[in-house]
Amino acid sequence: MSEPEPAHALYTAAQVRALDAAASAGGLAGRELMRRAAAAALAVLRTRWPEARRILVLAGPGNNGGDGCLLAAQARAAGLEARVLALTAPSGADAAAARETARAAGVPIAAADADPALPDADVYVDALYGSGLNRAPAGVAAAWIAALQPHAARVLALDVPSGLDADTGMPRGMAVRAAATVCFVGWKRGLYTGRAAEYAGACTLATLDLPRALLASHRPDATLLGVAALPPRARAAHKGAFGHVLVIGGDHGMGGAARLAAEAALRSGAGLVSVATRAAHVPALLAARPELMVHAVETAVALEPSLARASVLALGPGLGQGGWSEMLFAAALASDRPVVVDADALNLLARAPRALPMPAVLTPHPGEAARLLGTDVVAVMADRYGAVRALAARHGAVVVLKGAGSLVADPRGRVAVCPWGNPGMAAGGMGDVLTGLIAALLAQGLAPWDAAAMGVGLHARAGDAAARAGGERGLCAADLFAPLRALLNGAADA
Image (cartoon, rainbow, N blue to C red; front, side, top):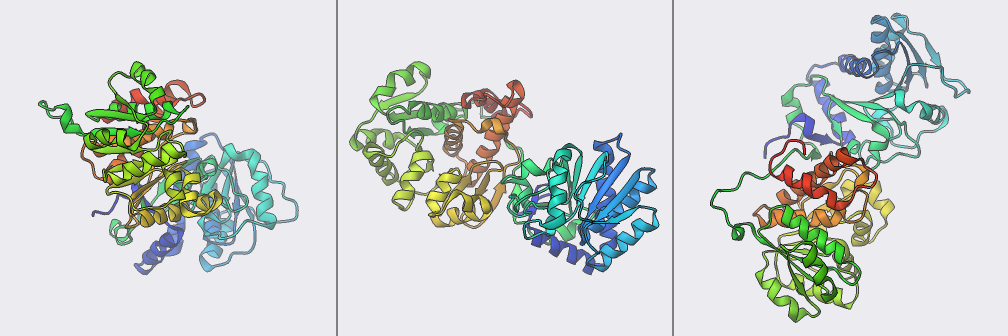
């Protein structure tokens, strides 16, 4: 497998420290890396805030603070007013040298005092801790972070907003809220999941011109999904070449979930789509979408003909958790068909764990993931990467852990992260659309990993296109169908 481009490689904080050490061992001095980091950050600052003249750097004791001090020196050389508030004395030789360079450039450097109030500035630079903090900020640092909150629109964070866990994307107690973040060497994986989007703002990667060979020598922990679409169809194509998806779900009062999953499978290119649901839902489903083959299924025996014709199952949208639900769940898994397991089917699996047919894709949100792992949502969110890998290993399946920065994992530990999506997608039915989409991609011959990764990316991009068209608030799951179809057919931006 080829190594990902730097723009798509995600690292843990420990991995980036190893890259820094390897660069130093190869003759690239730490002070030179600091100089490059400062120059990259200043370039972002001047591009984003071209009218800014007064720069205030909050500098911590480590190399992150050193980056900030050199940024202040370079800003001073460029004719800007720059000053530094230093949290404590420097903790290393490179950080101390950077602080002296700033002083020599005429940058005023003041030590922290008991007053947490910050002088007024056009831009505030968070150079307190970056990715180096492994505890909740405290004391003066915490007071400064709190004082920065009203100025979030004018905050630039260096590497990672201080207080944000670089590996999980979750704040450690409190964290800096920045309008922009410049990440150094390689993307920290936490910037793309958890609550990172609330804190990091617009993110820019500065590799500091590290040699490509050096970056390639350290395999990243995860990768970012890239833009993907299916190839054009052969001119002699027929519906039998693109699979038959069977959606199983829609208990009383939940027929809409089955309908959304089924229409998503149609809109995503499945050749045939059937629905096995409660008899009461059949007329409405047929009236709304006559292309579907809808079957009233009240017993396991009644499900057998539909199972026999299907090539892929979408199991769970609106399935419920009663006796009817358990019966269809057991019959579906016993059929040994490739399956996408979602929603109530995941809850049934958590209640009575069992082997899954292969291939299988599971699509839990954090609550469902917590039930499958026997833990709680707080624990899942505290380490989304660990949770999705644990689920994939436990079930021997590809797993999609949904949420901001959705993760896709396989049983070998490979993880991809979705960089798209928006808060408007926090609405009922979105997961049902994703289930139908992934099932349709499986039906068209994609491997489970490819179907899940492509499906997650297309789903999020369609959500972004729908939000651009009408705004995030009030976005409905069915709004994704039109842009989804366009994206699947190769549109660059639906």
